[in-house]
Amino acid sequence: MSSNAVNSAGTNRRASDDPIITVRNASVRFDMDKGTSTVLNDVTMDIYRGETLGVVGESGSGKSMFADALLDAVVEPGILTGEITYYPEDGDPIDILDLQPWELREVRWEDISMVFQGAMSAFNPTMSIGEHFEETLEAHGWDEDEGLERARQLFADLHLDPDRMLSSFPHELSGGQKQRALIALSLILEPEVLVMDEPTAALDLLMQRSILNLLYDIKDKYDLTLVFISHDLPIVSGFADRLAVLYAFEFVEVGEATEILGNAAHPYTRALLKSTPNLDISLDEMRPIEGESPDPVNHPAGCSYHPRCPLGDQKCTTDDPAFRPVSDDHKVRCHYWEDADEAVPLAFGGEDE
Image (cartoon, rainbow, N blue to C red; front, top):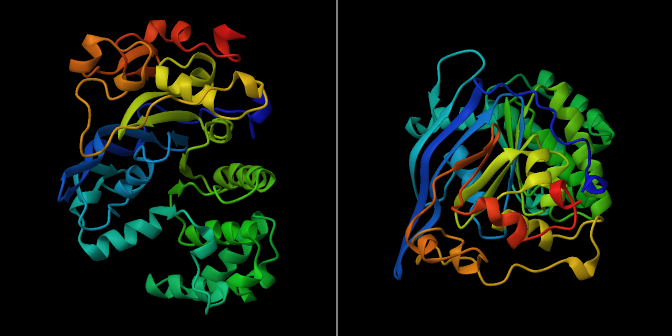
């Protein structure tokens, strides 16, 4: 899949003993008339300082809920439980779910920032882009002149004319310009972590690649940790150090990006690779994933993927598999992962080349 890579996957700058965010047993539930809807199910994850973590899965798998959970931004009446801890480079660990509203507001912009879906509608159409920056700086008590100078530098880093961007109104910008302006705004208060929820979904392929290449440079210049949420596995795999695959509101496979691309161990990950357009396989070799994702109200017992899995048997219907090591930096939740390569053969990567 190298022909789809934006850059060589895996800068591997992280240290396994240096987490910047830890998530423990995080769940998000909504009480509904027809029952309790679980849209994030007891997930645990370490995000390491300086890495790019790609979170991938089908639409409706829980990716956006995971992103919202990192900032305690789940909308009511959703209920977020578990533990989410942020470890600033200087200072004591911060329990995200135990913050007062004013403390959380500071953390969300100044420590952990987020680029939400929908750059096209993210800006107030009655305000110039510069006014959006001024409003953010004022709300957080930052020096406006220093902040706008940083904004100009960010726009220059993103290959945009700073003066034109700050004076423009949203309707005067293209989709790619709006997306880059939103990235600049998310970085204006110098956060350590940037969470990006489908940031390139509405853009054409060339603009997607252009923005990802710019992000690659921005990440290094500003020493960022990135959490990149996407349904597009080929796009994110060329950008991330590690991949975390979500299925039915749970992580089912986690590992170095190059390891998962070359040796995907979960039948779902392999099916996802096989169903996604890329330049390394012909269209007649692509296969859709049969069946449907589970209903969040009626989650299947046992392995959540067993209704769609070619390896599913009676054990899979009753026993929820724990994570099993594939290698030092690669783990998978599957009883029969060693047989996945035969059950879901791929036309590229690893042993199937």
